[in-house]
Image (cartoon, rainbow, N blue to C red):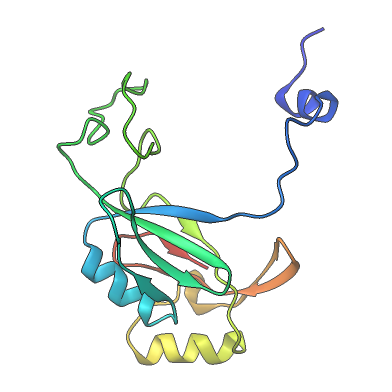
Amino acid sequence: MILTPFQYALTASNICTAQALDHTVLVVNSLPRTIAFYARLGMRYVAASTPAATHALEFGASRIELREYDPLSPLGPRNGAAEPPDIELEPPSAVFARPGAAAVCVVVAEPVAEVKARLERTGIRVLCDGRVVRRVGAAGELCSIYVRDPDGNVVE
């Protein structure tokens, strides 16, 4: 009997017990432009302290690491290739990492209507025709609005 991925997930034993998401990585065109955008959303910029470290944005117990897009990197433009290159970068990166390919959801302290009004006053367009959308997130039901960062990533 051949199992679907979903059926396999229900029958497989756990390799480990995931407890929390520590960080995510955004590939960006411009570090300064991205840092300025997210700083306005209340995130704190943390500069890379060593060559092995990454630039990051921190808020609460969360962290977004930033990697500047390099079209000359072995993981740069794919030119339609379906398979990833046989190469590992340090630190490893997503195979088809591109600016604008991510979506992140940020929980804020203020009421969503207040945040929406502030975004619109600063000229940041709220997607979904400016509507507040009801969603389910990790902690339950959310009232969400969506915008795009300077690279086109969706910020919920």
